[in-house]
Length: 247
Length: 224
Image (cartoon, rainbow over all chains, first blue to last red; front, side, top):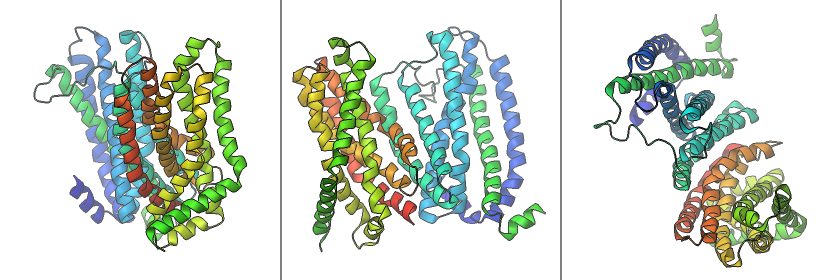
């Protein structure tokens, strides 16, 4: 994946090429997202049987678990883009960080909200100071930090480079935060995907979940490419290719 | 001038500067004391209740007052241009930053550690756990300075970076708070404290190794 990112960024490093490439990619990604999300939602909400313990309430995992996965995934992509932005000074990588931070924050927020809505009937409370909930909350704060730092610095390039550094510092800290709160206190359900060869979830429930996870992933890529296109136009508004692209 | 001479030179300069501004040192310490003293006012002053929360109160207060002292670390050096000179100097920036942080910790964190036993007694913490509290603060406050300096380096160029600094740095302080406060709580309950202490020490070593490089990189982003 690393070499793939590196080579594709070398090819797509220039804003005009990237703008055009992303423009052709977005409709296809959006279509694929719709298809997968449609299947995942139908499979999860209609086809999958109700859970023997949690009844219909378990169905919130089709939003909750993909959001939680994405919340971590997005931060890791930001850190990888941060390394690329700081070492090779690629504009596209800088734009990736600032474009994906609000999306990652939204996924984190969604994971927290769906989790707390599920927690009320199942645990009897909206919020517990549990390890995973707390580390997700800290992750939300880390995202908000990146967004605030980006907003505070006027110069777009300096802001993006500062955010890149913060994302890298954050990604080093995420495992430390995660394990420290785990040690501190835990109540959350064990991971359902601990052993892929021998899943503890019935396939009828699992498949829609995996499809939803993939759909969320593609959804993120669709949105981030759209946001990057917009930000590139804004950043390079004085250059000729923007003029040509918009006329 | 050798590497070591540059290191001690930076420490001497920063310590002398902070001795010339003794008021600032006193202010951070006073903030620590006042925050701790406000907690009993917010609850009923029952001895058992306060002692139970004393580790958390002391640690959160130490965390906040460290946050307030970070401003001094780079701000005036940034404004009078000496920070830029350090970046341009032939010595490795992370090395010089380590010296600055050591001086900073000696003039702030160490004072908090020294004031903590009295406050712990005020809050009703048993005297036998005070060595544990001191050890946890000795290991933990340098981590707070090191992590905080990264945030300060990122915001040094901003006119009103104070609130932003808190937002950037406080979430990263969570593990230090957990292990620091919980080692003291464990000692109060008579449980072994070796685990959290070793983890604090490990985090200190990690921060000492990595943070100076992050600080140097952040300063280059901010100053350039």
